Structure formats: C-alpha cells, structure tokens
Image 1 (cartoon, rainbow, N blue to C red):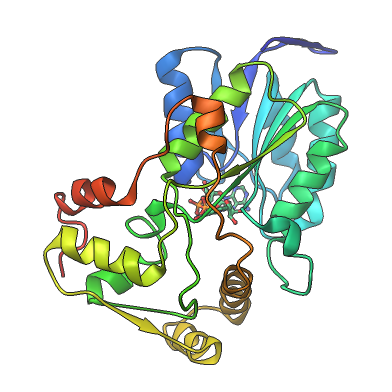
Image 2 (cartoon, rainbow, N blue to C red):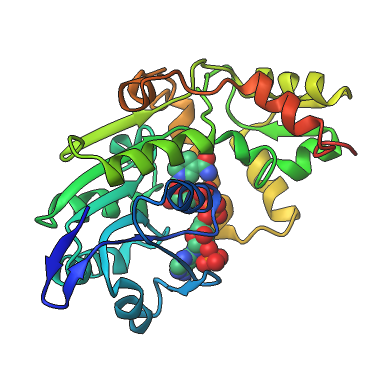
Length: 286
Ligand SMILES: NC(=O)c1ccc[n+]([C@@H]2O[C@H](COP(=O)([O-])OP(=O)(O)OC[C@H]3O[C@@H](n4cnc5c(N)ncnc54)[C@H](OP(=O)(O)O)[C@@H]3O)[C@@H](O)[C@H]2O)c1
C-alpha cells in the first residue's frame, strides 16, 4: 500500500516488536515477498523504537504507510503513538491483540495494552485490522514454557480448559496478508489453531515428540504465583500471568475459529508436526 503524507510518499511497513515472536517472522516474510520496504523496529531492532521514549517514534515512523502494532503491557502511550502515526502518514494499522481480550476488562486485570491498541487503531481514522490470536506454539520453545519443559515438569493453573494453540508463523502470515492486501479493513480476526488441546495434552504431545518424560502438574492459582515468585519473577509479572490464566480458565479463549482459513485459504498448522520438528533440533532435551 502506498499513501501520501505531508512528507511525500509513505510506502514502508513499520513492524513493531520486530525482534519478537510474530514481528520477527512478519518482517522476514514481508522481505521475502518484497511487497514493500520494511522498517523492523524495537528497542534492540534495526530501527530503534521504544514505547517509553517518544523521541524514538518520529524517526521510526518516517516513510511508514502502514504499521504492525505490538502494544506494550502498559497502555499509557498507545493512543498518542497511534495519533502521531496517523498524522505522519500511516493509513493502515494491523494491531496484535489476543483471543478473548474483549472479556479482559471484566475484572481480569489483564491485556490493558492490547485493549488500548485495539481501541486506538479503531479510532485512528485510518484503515485498521485487529488480530486476536491464541497462545503461540512458540511459548513452548522460545519463551515462558521452554525452561519448565526442559526441566521435565510444566505446572500451570488451567485445569481441563482447552486452548487452541496457534503457530506464530500463521499469525505472521495473516499479518502480512492484511498489511499488504485490501479487503480486511474494519475486521477483527480471532486466530486459533486447528485443535483445542488442554495444556496437559500439549505437554504430552511435546514429551512424545521429545522422547522423554515431561509431567504436567495442575497448580492452584496461589501455588502458581508462589512458584513464579520463587523463580524470581517480579510481582507485577506474576500477577499478569495469573490474570491471563484466569481469563483462559473462564473459557474466553477456548473456541476454535476458522479465521486463519478465511484469510489465508488454508488450515492453520497443527501442534504435533510442529513439536516433532522442534524436538528434532534438541530444543527440549534436558
Ligand atoms: N505469546 C503469545 O502466545 C501471545 C498470544 C496472543 C497475544 N500475545 C500478545 O502479543 C504481544 C507480544 O507478545 P509476544 O509473546 O509475541 O512477545 P515477544 O515475543 O517477547 O515480543 C515482544 C516484542 O516487543 C518488543 N518490546 C518490548 N518492550 C518494548 C518497548 N518498551 N518498546 C518497544 N518495543 C518493545 C521486544 O523487542 P525489544 O526487547 O528489542 O524491545 C519484542 O520485539 C503482547 O501484547 C502479548 O500479550 C501474545
């Protein structure tokens, strides 16, 4: 997409969170297809962008006609950034949010940054699309649950409530499509994987792929919080994760949707072959 601004033609795509799980994959995908120049931004990115340092915003926005918005947990700067972006020539926003986020305001105390991102792009006057994915497969091999899986025990407060985990590659593929093709403006896509699995089933799938025992243990919310604090997590982060699981336990993200197929014309990836591929790299070896 090419737009005109006071500064001339703005055709770059500014990818925020470009070192993160979806932003990294999105920037690579956009570069592979060569549809538009990419500005890959984050605090440690090629383009320096820090939500807490507004002086970094304008240089990052220079030449951008579209933005992939990965909002911070703290919602306080989001609206002002989106206002500034629209004023500087951005005509399309794709905001990353989360499945069930519309319920997060109902006393869950979770997702304020994502909710602020949704609201800001909807009110921006520009084209907008919101992506609300489930938990990524990549939490199991790049993030939160890698260390517990390696240690052979995943303890969480989630019970039997299923979660249709999604591949971050599919989220990036959807983001690339809606950033570069018309027809998605004003839409909110709930992006799930193809199957709703419990966390215990996901841990079993990974254990089988890794060829070693990994135990799932159900924790009370209080026990989970104590474990996180004992591991050195700050209180605010432990409370944030507790709030996220409360939202999941209430079933607000459990539904399998067909929005990945609607956008990409194919089914989303399944956890099992992904787990076999990742296990073959030795990722979950003790
Ligand atoms: N993980 C999931 O399963 C999942 C599912 C649904 C929704 N989400 C949502 O997606 C968003 C990103 O989560 P993620 O798990 O994908 O995170 P991630 O992989 O850790 O990526 C976060 C990105 O944000 C950048 N970042 C962090 N602090 C920043 C700051 N102050 N200023 C500018 N950039 C900053 C990081 O890069 P630098 O460190 O270089 O700045 C990184 O590129 C969150 O809102 C999360 O709630 C996540």
